Image (cartoon, rainbow over all chains, first blue to last red; front, top):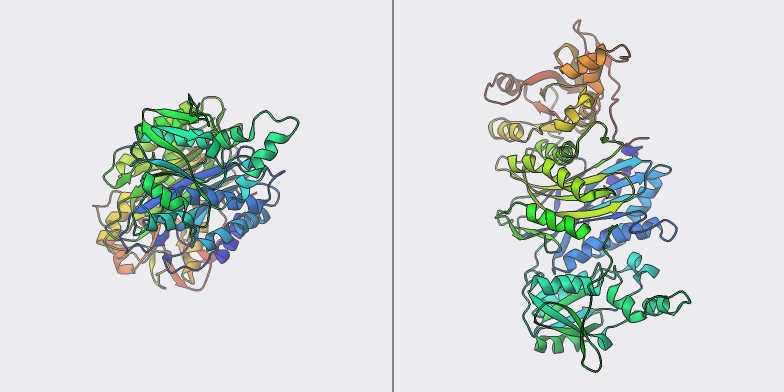
Length: 308
Length: 308
């Protein structure tokens, strides 16, 4: 059975000029005569923690497995190149499941020029585990890192936040294109993608820079899904709280000079809404500023993947 | 808990001149100004299929997870560079387990100059799943591939085969050094590592070259473990059958010109015994030749990882 899957995978792998030795060998070989730095990102998703088959199709799970890694490269403004896929498949119809997972990855892979160059398959009596390892290259404009920001920088956010559990965590589009465009046209000083929630990932960005983040609560773009979650009879959080703390929106947080921020948020040529949601200043932690200007500490709670 | 593990991992990651951005960022960044091709290998091991905690320590499991990937690069005579580690950890003491898995990888990583540059951790109620993605570079002598052999080539084998289930599958040393030395000094035309058993992997090597493999049964080096397995009261296979079909010895199979084979097997400078075990000829399949010269087809059965 495994051999059949490997053969199927091999036949489906898109031809690539960059891959000089194919998946039939023990390792894939990539032409890297460009000499640019190599980026490596690696993320795993697990049935029961990151998705369930009740609420997601195999294609959506495949999409998510690749998309979360693309989001990591987008957070560094790197160009995706290729990926390996390691699947631990439940018994039953592993070939069928494998095919549907890969089918879910292929549109995304094609959209961003990612070759699926190899991987590994196991079949067991347990739940599905999918690991994607993504290789990228540094684009001509250089890389974004988490550090590099200064006091006084504006905090920018792509898109809207909150309520991704209603579906967005399965079908989000990683900000690959937007990040490459922003990197080419603007001076971005520091960046991170929001995988574990705005307050938690902003806390990471701020502490990596030895700074304090101050959020303007009224400026945070709240998604329709967050409002929906907050409006049910059993709702425990407000829509704003969902936007602040929910994970898996995979939007980008950027730190830029205040003047650059003004230019970016008014640029109609970027394919996503970009909002200034706060500033970095001397100090530490994540704080909120309400419409009256009052500062209060915001606890960096969020979605820690797989935490007990 | 996950954050604690990530912090621990980060502190343990060896400093590297090659890694220009560390694991604190969304992806590791590797200096690749050499411009050599990039190799990518990816293998997963799964509790219950590839190991059990009854018969293996976490350090052994960590060693195995990295070693199987090193063996893939050894089969191509490539230089290992860095690895990412993705762990799906059972609840209980995930930090302790993670530490022991990594401790099991570190000696091997240090021995072969592999930087552990990042990874991903999840914690769940299920069994342990460990995926290693290994990046390598092409050494000056070029790469070995599975194809490139000709009729008349000798088949060489490193080490001994059989019975790895008694422990060798957990503590084997990948043939990284031997393969780099052989590649530098000799003309190796085709290579594969034996993960699924001699007959099965030789079948792959032969069919990749459109050739037939003929094994001299009396020349196959049989390990002490294979004899031990074959000597018990419940033994069902002979020691030779274990050597032919058992998986996970991770020795190398090489195809070389007959004259080159003579020089290699008599070279005392290579740190492992190398044996000529057969030849490649026109035709297909894997055949055995017994001491009387009689040819018989050998069914390519072996250990298919995770097959139902």
